[in-house]
Length: 142
Image (cartoon, rainbow, N blue to C red; front, side, top):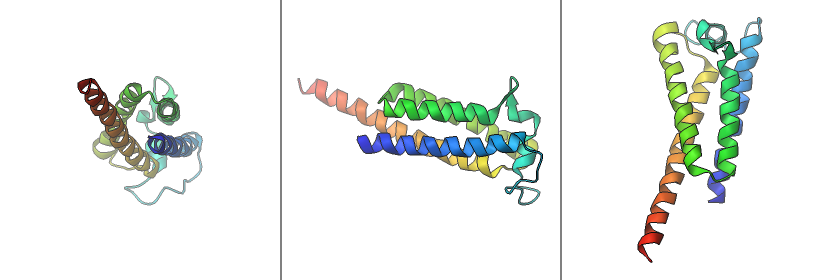
């Protein structure tokens, strides 16, 4: 399952990159390249009151989360990886809800991050399930 670890690490790295781009927007006052129209504007989202949690930028939390996911995946910590990914998914879904129903503006970086965490969730669920099924089969074979 080396390929699974590498795929998880690559997706986690992509999540770090997207989160860094969002963090750059958070601290920038310039017009952003992802300011497409009234429905797609990363600046509005990343400068809103929802862009920080306890005075910490959400994008910085994303960077830390994706780094943790990458490390857990490479360390074959499937259970902890699944917990981290599900926590990230819950966090991302909350932010998606805020973009849709509160701000009514979408951030391109946030949507890409949502796709990445969704893929990571599917991969980690599959990897965890494969391990669980493998353990059950090996215990039953004894």
